[in-house]
Length: 439
Image 1 (cartoon, one colour):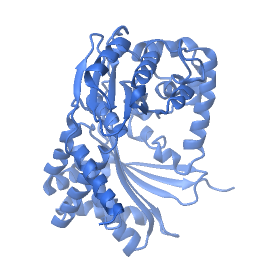
Image 2 (cartoon, helix red, strand yellow):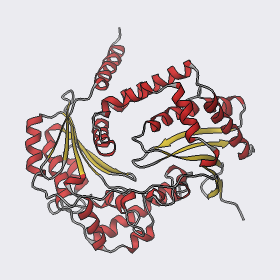
Image 3 (cartoon, helix red, strand yellow):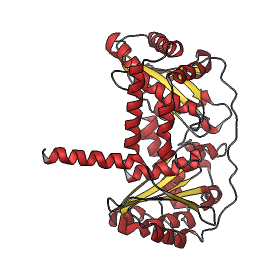
Image 4 (tube, helix red, strand yellow):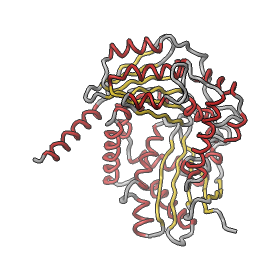
């Protein structure tokens, strides 16, 4: 056996060991901060992450974009970290860092050599305890966010589909999911400095956060450092959660959007779906795989390979804390009419609604989701993010170990039932996403 093959087997078995079970310790500080520790001493690396239960859905009308804006603003500096030095401090200590925002939460993290664990904890406590929020920081990050919006949405092909800004306003009437995560520049430009400070005071408190430390740690020593840096941070008022129920979609919505960045149109069927916590959301993920995951999937084989009417097909669920959306779409090949693509997509949906998927398809599904489960728990950064997400948004941290059992228990009959329940023509948006017409 060659050294390369031996190394491949070694990596494979290490990955399986990670995937078998993620051990963790979970507790709360007196100020309400939820803490999750995962010890893995196989490599001298540690990730420190803090997830705050605040996202775009928590913003006030006329002030969209605040949650995402803070993802940028809170790297500006603190009372003890000079403005513009955050990234330099991390890099100088051999680390990396990032942050991301969704409709439901905001997550910040650093990955360091494990001997810099205390530095990571100190920096996150600084971010939580006393960041500097001033006009120069707000003005600077305002320009950064505008450029991000231009590059990712306004000037990116299919950007308003990828980021749902061209979809969610049709799918939600009452719920703030109708707004985009990045918000509008008009709202950010109109906001006063005191409004940014008030947003921080309301949401960036230990009792609205989960701290995760994963990697090469000593648990008792880590607990001591966490107490030293976070216990004294005062808790805030309890956050009132968004609790808005949407009326069901009962009549088909037909819409057209235009994009000057594309040459090939897209047609999409979009459905409103249940919370990420709902078992049916897991079933919809499996339906996506049946339809478009790989060259042997149903829509790919028929529309791309056999009928040659589509250049590309896609199906995916965007699950969230309160509701989700489910999109099935296709790009035409040549001059194929978008109506033809919709007809064929409907035929494939009808097959799911009237016939059980085959035993072979079912076994392939199980294999794919087993593989995804292994991969999701194969890195320290991934484990840290998953632990925080399962605790905060699902209310069950141990889903990091148990979620695969949900997929294993889903039956062919359930796939048929969920397709019938949610993929109905009168409950959807039919969106044609077209190139901007020329003069």
